[in-house]
Length: 395
Image (cartoon, rainbow, N blue to C red; front, side, top):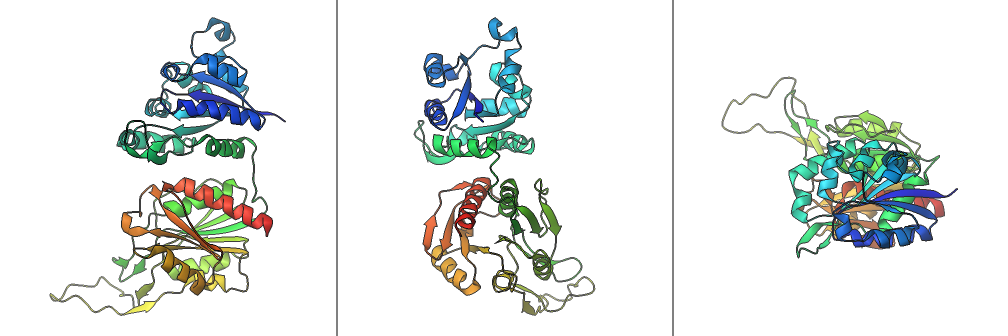
């Protein structure tokens, strides 16, 4: 069955990439209908877009020939997916706030199909709190995002803001419209967030992990069809759709929940588990009785990654995370061997990764390591799950 998309081309220099996207989509049997915003016509012409797509490039909300049949509604009904590329700051803001001032924004408000946005803008515009609020609101509404990537831009600045490359966008389009679920029938276990080890009823030992990366991985696994259990320490993130969430507090609780979730085909241990806990937990609040702090004796917490890696019910693929502040690849390589897991995803947490939306990681496997570019944590999750699917398919 043939598939089709509605491509909304926004007004940015990256609009030239939309021409290549149309051509490559056609090569893969995906039909493209188009809307070009008024600003978009300053960068690509309707004639060129029409020639590549084989359909009229729509620009005007009040094209009587189309509007006699409610064209702005019909355009979104006859396709499988709506793609916005480039998604400018203005288009993102209009969509996030439900505005409908032109054909592009009205179509976004009228569609009942999934929407994929490929942002492209100046780095400062992308990082502005207003843009980030708008993106977060759209994600909560179910809008998918690809990119932006890091790199040099036409404004002679460098950073996140470059539109994802056409092939990257096309891979995501195919995953969304073809309903590809390469992990259907598989079971997955993911741990996320910190653990809190109580000192007394008030205080605890913990860390700054937000749980964002683990939650993103669980969401990506579920989207790929895996029956996913997410075991999370104390965080404030809502559970991803289609994921079974198990809430825990301490490392021992997380280990018990992980063992209870077995057997599983895939285990991704992303949680920042406390290495130590107080040997004794005070029954009441520890009082300050002198200028000297109280002596606290620590004991070692169970090693969840090593325990599951050596379990009789060991998953087919066990992946750990390594948060390092120096010699990232060397220490992560050593950790993979010590823990007995298959892969380690390593990152440098000295760069303010905890709580951030983006990360730079290294994937460590038995056959070597590879450095990934700085990506949104959701994009890291999608890329990791794609690797997992390929590995299990060929195993």
